[in-house]
Image 1 (cartoon, rainbow, N blue to C red):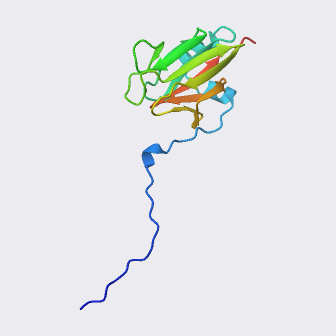
Image 2 (image 1 turned 90 degrees about the vertical axis):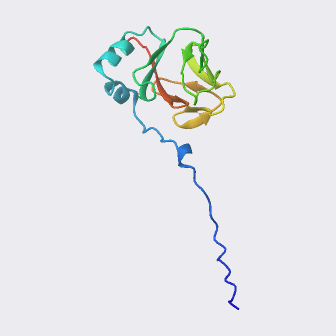
Image 3 (image 1 turned 30 degrees about the vertical axis):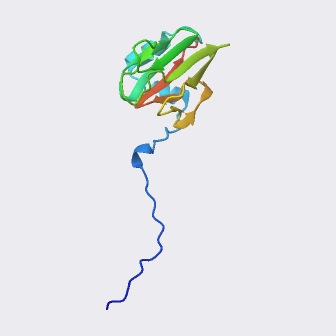
Length: 148
C-alpha cells in the first residue's frame, strides 16, 4: 500500500488582468495641449472662456468631441443622453456632468462599471482641465477655454 502524499499548504490567488487600468502619466496642461493635433488645438483655442469640451484622445471613439455647453450633460448608452457612448461597457444612464460657479463636476449615476477620473474610481467629484474621465472603454479628456 502506497503512502498518502499531502500537498503543501500553498496560498493561491487569482488576478483578473481585465480589471487593471493604466494610470495616466502626470502631464502638465501645457504638455497635454502640445500633444494635440493642430486641428484639436484649433478646437480648444476656439472655446469661449470657461466652456469645456471632452476630447477622446485614446480608447474607443478616438477623435470624438463633446461640447459641454449646458449646465447639465448626461452621459450614457441610451440615445436620449446628451453624450451617447454606444458600447455595452457603458450603462444606459452612466454619469452626469454639471457646471456650477465656473467649475465642472462629474457624478456616477450608479453605473455597473463605474466612472473613473485619472484612473481612480469616483462617485461625485470636481473635474478640471486636463483630467481624463473613463466611462466604459471611452477615455475623455476635459479641456476648458480660457482667454489670455
